[in-house]
Length: 158
Length: 158
DNA sequence: CGACATTCGTTCACCTTTCAACTTCTTAGG
DNA sequence: CCTAAGAAGTTGAAAGGTGAACGAATGTCG
Image (cartoon, rainbow over all chains, first blue to last red; front, side):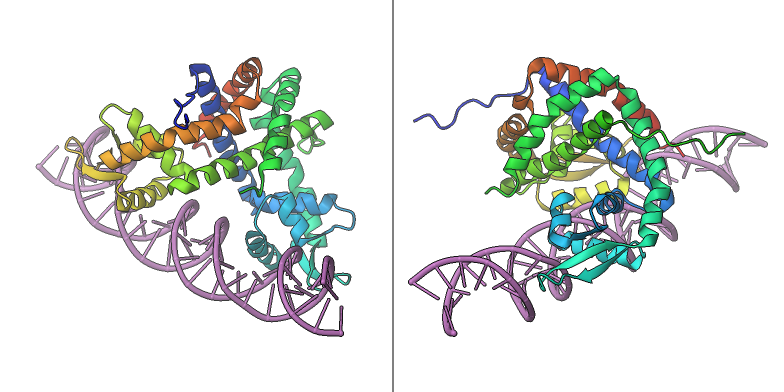
């Protein structure tokens, strides 16, 4: 039985594309993070504010928020504690499930969000969106969508 | 003078593409990291091994390695200490500049690298490269290249 | 009902990253 | 030369992240 087949190395083109992709992502993360620093927010903070502000009652269950932001419950718990201390959110008991908690966006959190959003969007434009033609952006989206689906399916597998 | 212009929000398409891009990157990082775990390596470890193994004498100056891997000197210093303890690399004095140090790939580091690489490449294929057509991958590369250049130019600005 | 598994969220111990201070050496300018 | 400015790396404390263990509440199934 053949178990030890030759590794399928990347071609030159594949390797270049892959490395560029990784590099862009690292630099982009760095840059967006840096652009948020003046507002005393991290991308993680911002992401949570976005999810909460887009939710029905400006509130989400811890678990749902953890799933939505792709982080562990533990990490989210620490994160929310920090944001609570900063006055951006507050915890509230859940009546239908007494194990559960809601993270609720405070007025201050909402204001912060509204104040920062234009700058963040400008940052995303400046460093990403405006550097690609709309067609190429569409292609990129189309190419990444199956990957996103694949990776979602992978999550939490062995 | 008009300083407070209306924010240029993202269109629907732009937003979807952007969010997918961010999501893919987070999930991909998570998955690749997870696939390296059985070998007791992080992406950061692996990245350093790659850079060293591709360098002339299997050695690089700390500063150059920090720049190449996009991390701070401090972080790299801690990182190299860990990898040194794991036997993957060792520090060596630089004779031409006595402030400087080389990080040298050990034999064990090289062996580790060669042993792990096929698995990592398979992982990159499985979760990314093989999910895109070669043409789309080429397009993606072409679209990301100007962004990479822009971001490189940004690095270390105010 | 009663026992067992599962889910929710927090906590603890440990590891990694960040930031600023610091040492040592090199380089540029007078 | 000699001094001041800067670069190379390290360090240590504080902040952030991880994973296992935990208590409390809910679900499930004989």
